Length: 261
Image (cartoon, rainbow, N blue to C red):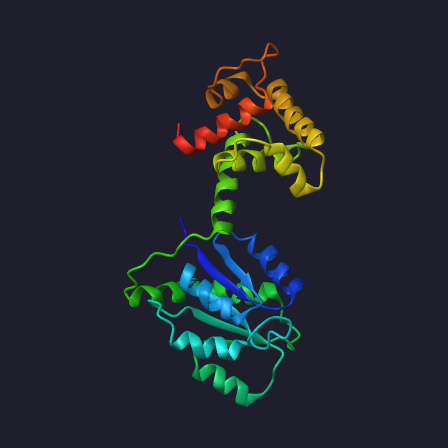
């Protein structure tokens, strides 16, 4: 499996941050470990998650600190290696560019260029990925990259999706995403009010979430081949209808993923 490139975004433009995250979501080998508009918080995130690369805005007018101070402090940070720094900026001052390069900027992209976009910035890092990983390996880094909560959630929800797809529950079903979120919550220890939490996340009533999830389960049992059901859902069904209840289904898959059966 191709190694993931872990990226920290330091940017004060909310819409730009959303575009970075949206584009990264289209590439399974890219993961955003954190997003912040605060250069001081960015230093903490580097020490916490050891990203392979940082996309760094220099000014951070709507945040705290600035990119130049981040670069200066990063030089003195107690970390096992320095991430690749891709600066993205509206500044066009050669003096500022020289300072940024002196303190660790590996490449500078001007936001004024006609072909600049958040997607192009990530594509550039993808192009450099092998070199970035090779450079990191040459530093004989003893630590492993720490999986961020966002990475864990993304990875786990993909596993859940693969499992329920096996019995015919797919994104076309109205309760598909609710079901994935419900199983994720159960897997992570929430034992009560799961549908309440899911409803709050989507601004839906608890009843509508419960109905959509149960309908998705019922539809799978009506339309999926019986052999696929029996081989992938092995728990006893208590319902007289021959279909798992919402609670049975959610906790079956939470336990299945947790215990690996």
